[in-house]
Length: 501
Image (cartoon, rainbow, N blue to C red; front, side, top):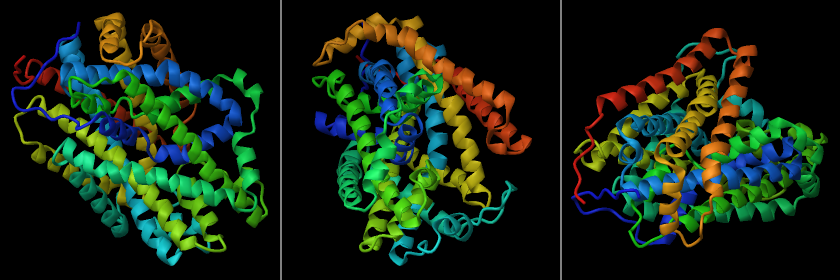
């Protein structure tokens, strides 16, 4: 059975199970729920995509979430300390890697929140109304035609970045008490706004055309391996697994609260939110297609272009309320983004405190300052390109590697059956032996296929048609993350702070 490691000092606890669930949902639901999931459904067989998606949820998403909650709850540690207490010093590498990947991701994720903050202001004047694409890429970001050096810092983005990190600091500097206060805004408000956009979208002319393109099932796509890879990839990315935050959040669960049923609620809430988000996005895109006289397929774009080009264009064409809905949409993106950032920084701070006797406010301050300084790279003229490269290589390789290592350590070193028994001791629902199969076989196979497939694609062609040096920089970033994790594992082996039973 897993040993509980309790700190000698007065521990922090969530004041209720509801706050733990809300905080975890906030960590899971992010900007990707708005711009990535709806487009994946649309481009991978419409409603047919939901079949592999929910299979992936049951066989990968929920099992990994249960694994991370079990690690944090049982060991009362952040990610590196949890793996050390569970499997030994050398396996702290999986935890350090999770923390580094999480922090690195938030450094550029904060830039997207900064853009959203700026566009909240732009919405007041409808500055993007004439041509949103030209405004975003040329007027706002002033992106060069090809990736270049580090020059031309965008002060508007810097201001938004500073606001983002100040918001993150305020959210977590006092630990779970700060988080509990903030999630009343950053979790509940986005749900309200999504419902508002669903109602607003369904009332627009052309809305049903958008929904048809979003959910029209093409079951023939189920024989395409890529749809299954996309489904498992989305489930892994969308639940904030592998960023260390879920392990940290579970650390603060009181002894008398369960986490098994909570994990299922959190995972399902995230997926349902994603599905509803599509019902908010695609009716508006159907309206845009009707107003511009082009097919929905030509306006339905994913990622950054959906958030900062397609959707703003749709909003600017509204006969009334364009200013209000513009402000609300970018406020939605801000709250979703900030929630994911402060959850991840909380996970990093928790892991660091397991090894160093430093006040939490000092660690959080240093992390926020470091995140802001690193983020300045993405405020330069070529920052958009740097963000794209960093996101691709970290999410496609480093983050997936974390999930693979987590499953491998528990599946083949610690033993899934031992952890499953512990989970059932703290769960309102019984987790069957299917969980063992998922952790030991299905998840390693699925994530391994994602890594190999993506690697093969990059061997055959460079990512994004970037020059060789830019792709080399992406590989170097992944290598640097792995090396840093290894150095911390070796350098801090046996340095875990002493604890009392």
